[in-house]
Length: 389
Ligand SMILES: *Cc1c(COP(=O)(O)O)cnc(C)c1O
Image (cartoon, rainbow, N blue to C red; front, side):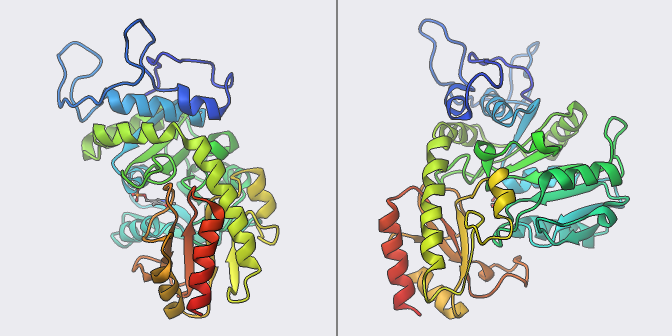
């Protein structure tokens, strides 16, 4: 766990902007001849008597990444996991047997799949809510142990009022530990990243990331992370990681920290590109519906712009599932592949996935907008839409 700072650039949290801290954090102590970047520590065990003992408990390459993430999230500590799913699962394990989880109707398909699997096995019961800006969860949260927030949701891009829902969870939910009030609030902030929002400052207890996406940013690594302020929760999650064995590889941790160095540049560029493409799609005669929180017509526009930002994912509908598949198959610059958050732009028909909620329209196309030239992206997409509808 990374709540002690042994990296060199330990600056008070707010002294530098996040665009600086993505570059400066998680580096070795400055000394003549010392490396500027930490190496990749490939060791399953460590000499006895030190802080580190066994490689399943801790690793210096994880520490560099975890200290960086904790700094970016203004969190007391962060923990990394081998995938976003492993981080999500670690949080779900905090719920007592027979407890109650309140989750959005349409979260990320893997989150939904795992929650349903555990609910079906009798591990906990699940109450779902429609993620809308004015959602009131007073009833759903009564007696609940965990509130799950995802904002925007993937792929419908629904927006929640993070601050209000967190407050309701703490007021009406049931505590899992003596030093917490009400339900624990966990938020999947994969789409926004700490570049746009630090959910802990809005009342969230645990922020969860698929670091596979924007944090790592290059579609070459799977990684998950959590960050929190509550030492008790951090220690439970650390113990769970150690005992479940869901630990990241040091090479993947290194790649993720390397990716974070350019997070500010990539987020700025891909969100700017997405704004232009969403606007053009909304004026396209063959496109029936565009979901994008950066558009003034989006029901969560105001709330999103005040919290999570506009994001770089767009979803839109065409006339049929066949047309959606044909469009995704005929782009040359956009890569027909699942996932989001890499430098390269990706396109897919989302309902092709079995875990996806039946509410996701069969003709919905999800775009992950990358950092390429926006006109090259638009020309390729526009041609594919016009040729296939
Ligand atoms: C991809 C994704 C996940 C799962 O993360 P993995 O790293 O693929 O395990 C969770 N939440 C959201 C919002 C995602 O986009």
